[in-house]
Amino acid sequence: MINLTIARRYAKALLTIGKEDGRYKEYGEELNGFAYLLEREAELKNAISNPMYPGDNRKNVLHKILEMTNLSPIVTNFLNLLFDKQRIDGVLEIAQVYSQLVDKLENISRAKVKTAFPLDDETVNRIRQSLEQITGGTVVMDVAEDKSILGGIVAQVGDLILDGSVRTQLQSLRETLIRGEVG
Image 1 (cartoon, rainbow, N blue to C red):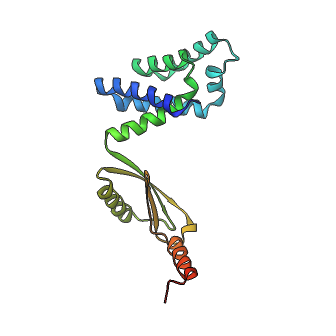
Image 2: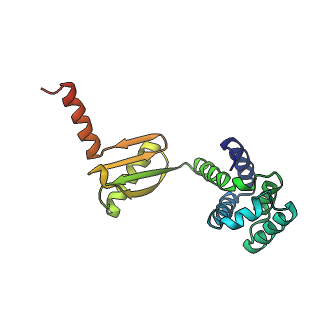
Image 3: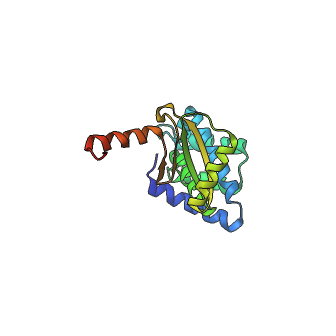
């Protein structure tokens, strides 16, 4: 694992190259694929990132993986650089930051929407359109059920939280009654 500042530095460097040659989306997909391969296969990640193993052996394992995955030369060189700088164990964090930078570049916001009950496609589209008006960009939604909100929806886009849940409305009413403001 590496800290966010270092992950951002590497992600920005790869994104800069990708913007120059117009292949930044492809590089992001390849980076994500490699990162999630290592996350799924803990032994593989250990084989290339654990300093207890000789560096040459770890590098050979990395080269075999890169040959089998058939990544672009840019991403292959990038992953070799991460290995050489002893940052290969931070590839997941770098991939996540890279995705965030691409979203920002393309004016895409990620929204988490919680509902008490399943929503039909029309309702999901109306919510997406409303969030797109608020954010001024494209919104990609992750909709999940959460029975604890009782009804309504809770939407989070970045730092913005729109809470229209019945649970929150009941809590607000309770606090108002406790303070004696009704009447």
